[in-house]
Length: 112
Length: 114
Image (cartoon, rainbow over all chains, first blue to last red; front, side, top):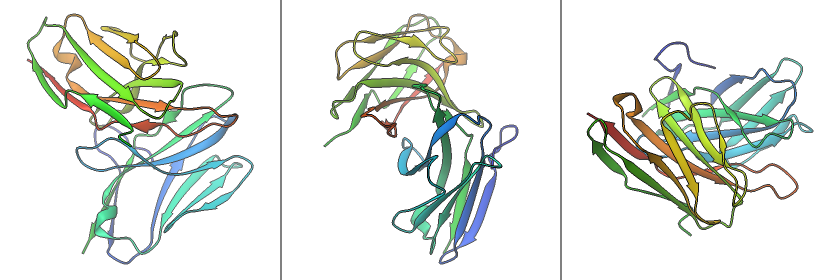
């Protein structure tokens, strides 16, 4: 989920495990949701998105689940690899706005 | 395909100096954005340009100006740098083709103000 203070929430997993990163959003008018991955020293990189007319979308090793009832979004990474270690951000957008709202991120650490 | 290119990658300034951060995208996107990222704060929008010829303030515009030079380029200027502007700055671009599309980010400019 979302961070409090200066420290990001951290998820530590073993290589090969499945990872689940959660995100709560607040705007019930949001209709577009995006997950980004940010590696150290780089910019955020688009992973997967989902629109509000869906509740699940799958990519390569990643699945995004959307629960509009409780305003919750999750990113599932299958068979997590050391290269998946990064900070993961969710973002929401809607109501005709040009501007997405970003969460603060979750740090994923994958141990070999 | 380079995507979003930011220059410079690193810069150190003294308080009061001015500087322009450059951003260019080659994806023919209409919208461009400038963000700053500070530890624990996530991405905060400074300014954005919904389309060529328009610019608007974001969440934290004070101390910054922008120029949308053409469809490809969107620059961010610090007229009189302050230590509070020490941060990592990201430029992004996106397109709306009848549906929202994700933003694409550059790799950032790491700026230190002494």
